[in-house]
Amino acid sequence: MSNLSRNQCAIGWPSIVLLLAAFAGAVGAPMTVANGVLLLLACAAPTAAMLLIWRGPPPPTVAELLYAVNISENRGPR
Image (tube, rainbow, N blue to C red):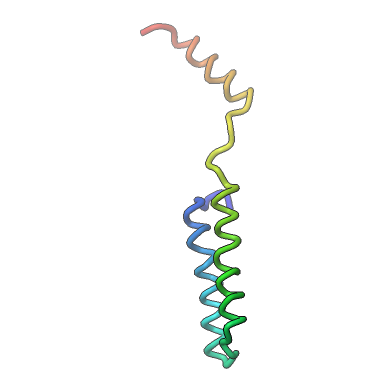
């Protein structure tokens, strides 16, 4: 999961759900209004929650901040 971006996950999840629905329809599962609503919710709800919650990279840790300051002090003015 660490190699996937937020956009890739947002596109991938509905694609997987729609492929499963297409497979179910090809096998003979009935497509009713209730199934359509369930399919829409299965595509939209997790994707919307993921896009709202997953906000980019985490803030830098104290160790990363100290390392960055240490490197800049060792280089000195140029």
